[in-house]
Length: 125
Image (tube, rainbow, N blue to C red; front, side, top):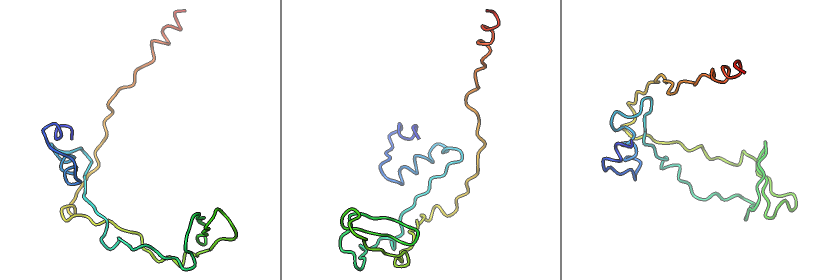
């Protein structure tokens, strides 16, 4: 990637970064994929019935309890069943559908230094 940058290329957009990662043979075992949020995942603000202004939220097993002021009164309890939003997904670009990435064996870059010099000094004393 450094060679790609030093040869005068920019990496300001996601597609330019993907090009830089894959340049000059790429990085073994690494594949860059362009993704974007699904257009249907862009939502309008959520209106909670009975809740006009929320300052504090407490999440629980059965639902959410909200307060206008820090734990003043019982708060408003909203069960999880009232929430109907789906988890957003990512859409892959068309070029990323035929990706075949393989695992690459890792090589040790440094050999451990033997600690024989300390043992040698202890035995000579």
